[in-house]
Image (cartoon, rainbow, N blue to C red; front, side, top):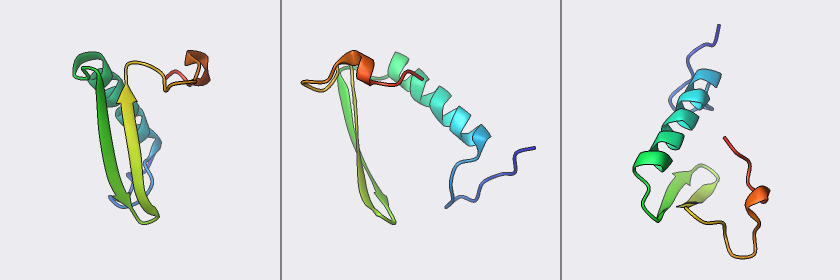
Length: 66
């Protein structure tokens, strides 16, 4: 059985599955052209770009499906 993760710790398997499912749903129903996000972490900022097209010079098969 998967124990609940601490709010400031890594995701449990169940939390990761929920994150992946919600992200997929967001991309399918909410994302228009792109979304740029920044999250502060103990290791510095993380920048996230969600877009409907691959980055310039990157082939679509370089991306891992989820």
